[in-house]
Each structure stands twice: as structure tokens, then as C-alpha cells.
Image (cartoon, rainbow, N blue to C red; front, side):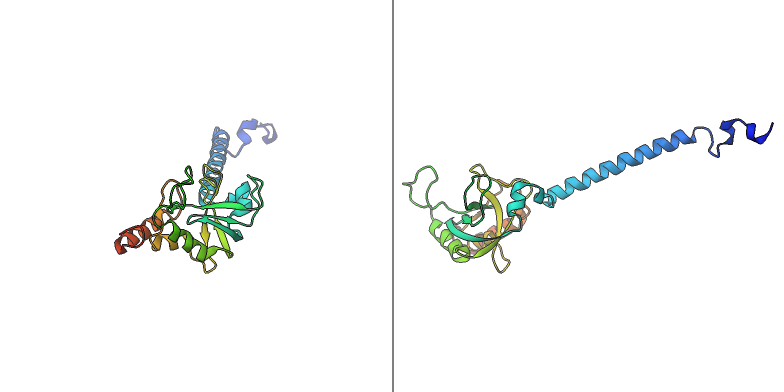
Length: 200
């Protein structure tokens, strides 16, 4: 039989069934590549790299801002418009620490808690009227009161929360997951051992 009239299946350089196996392999490779891409996106989101795609991330993450008011030891206001509350300033709550209350949030006639005035005074000394840098965590950017949750870095690069913890004027707070959890635990333990502030 002439070569040009040979059975088309016999002309293929691939053994019978190899094409279907190759298509299955390509399909599996594409699926694995898609899963790897989704895993990379998920990891980037957990690391905070995708915060810029969110409204709070665009407005606040790694932004420098002027502090216009100190509410108490762990709460300040910065001169950035709040797109949630539609106000000219944004109220920022330090993530990961809790300072004594200057006044009970539900009962304004209650006296300040011990060391509340000292905590507020230290925060005022370090940030009032100055420029700070805000760092957000990807797990959540607002608390139940709508305050922005953030780490606040001072002009020298140190952290306001760390300063409060080192002086014994704040407790670590594990209510919100954050990247400085272990560091804050160590600083609180050091303040306890040194009997500073809240830790007689």
C-alpha cells in the first residue's frame, strides 16, 4: 500500500492513547497552577500586602498622620478624614494593648482607673501634635465602636504601644490577633518583673 494511503492512526508519532494522557496531564498542571496562585493570594492577604485594595488600607496603612488629639492612653485622633464616619479626623485605637480608662465608657461620673492619667500623659508626651505612622493588620481594621485599629509608630521608629507596655502603663490585649502578639507579651512580662506602673 502506498505510504500516502496508510491508516491515519498509524501515521501518528505518538502511541495510541498518549494524546489523551497528555491532555489529562495538561489539565492537572493547569489545576495545580491555579491552586498555587490562590494559595499565594491568600498568603499575601494574611501578610497584609493586599490591604491597599481595601478602603481602610488605602486611607491609612503605612500612612503618616498628624495627631490632633489624645483621648486616653490607647486612643488618639489623627488628621485624616474618616470615610466610615464622614468626619474630618479619624479616631485610632491601639491594637494589642489596653490602657486604664480615664473615665468609664458607660458611666462618665466614674473616677479614672489607677494609672489612667499617667498612661494618657505618656501618650500625650509622645504623640500629641506630632506626626505618627499607622500600620494596619489584615485580620480586621475596626473595633466594635468603629475606631480604626492600628499600630502607631513614633517619629523615631519606635512603637507607642511598646512604650506604654515597657512603662507598665498598659496591658497586652489578645482580643484581636496581630503580628506583635509575642513581642507585647514579652514587654508586659518584663514590666511585671520590674514592678513598673500597674504591676506593684
